[in-house]
Length: 146
Image 1 (cartoon, rainbow, N blue to C red):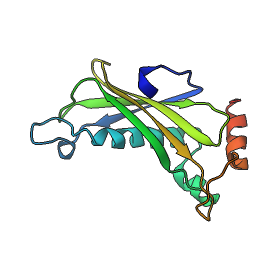
Image 2: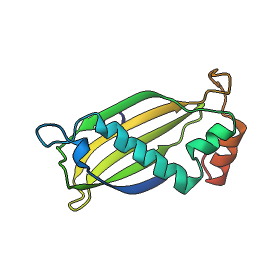
Image 3: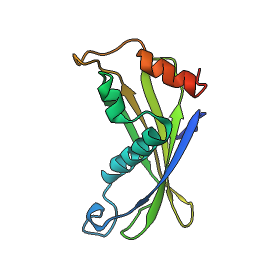
Image 4: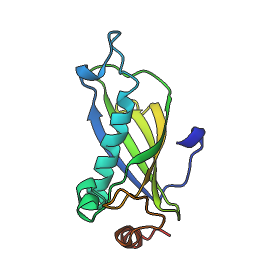
């Protein structure tokens, strides 16, 4: 979530993710950089469930790199816990994809972190697309997103 403000989501996905030993630091706490991977887990699940998988986008001649990322840490996670990553698609008219994330501790549903990402479209020449690609406009129509 950008700067802690809850934004209206058009589509929401949730995925369970176990905390692995390799994701913790010497103090037994999940290293802060791994939250970016948890957001990635959320985007991959979202893509599978809503038909916006990375390989499909790539096969259509586009990549969608992240150009902006925010993460707010609320409480530490440790090895053995399980989390739920909630990925919220935030609609916008510009040629970009915005997601907000909430990371919950699965058992208590306590919010452990929140964040957001912005992705842009690059064509097969790695040039920035200033307009939404046709496939993305079709995808938005399929899900009734204005």
